[in-house]
Image (cartoon, rainbow over all chains, first blue to last red; front, side, top):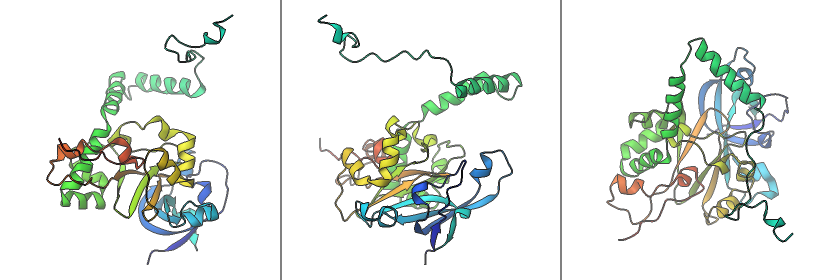
Length: 87
Length: 214
């Protein structure tokens, strides 16, 4: 069973590689990659943690609601582990 | 004055583009300063930088087209691409550096399209530089929001029962779409097949060329 996760709904300042349009949205982990160094730390030249990187699949209905062209179309994005919480 | 309204047009009828002779931007000056320092301190050489630029410029979508044609004709290679596309393309002879590649395959039921909403991530180490529109705000923002309209503008009209899957290249991975093999190409050799694979078909904004009978 693919794991259901939610992207944290936070809006922190600075260099973040979690697109704002996916924050707060739920999706299924399609595959796990990495570990890769956390770009939020790399960007500032501080010691970076190695984190799992999850490819998460979202439905257009989840991301855009009634505005979705076709609700069952999908978006996949790479989200670092610290941005995900159990859904 | 009858000709006033033509003065901003070139003899070909197109507007003149402003000359690019403003002062260097902060980051342009920074790039030159860092490059000169690296050369002065012996970390790299001007020749090495030039070689790297030449290597980058030599990469073209025809590399990707050969990879796609091999996926279409070689089941073992296809499996290797699904397992680890970076390793499979390296073993085919392409120097893709540290690039981490994922291949996503189109089928009768699924159409993949690639975008980078945050910047302009693109599998440059295999396909060369991205087209300008790939970096435009319109493409980057609209492809996740209304991919079917965007695809229609590129001339790709998909039936509703084909799932559109948008890959937002947000972090460390780069994506290449393996388009579906065109009908009527049974028995074609890899060179003939590669000639059907366009750059846009590997981004997902296009389809391969159709087979034509001579």
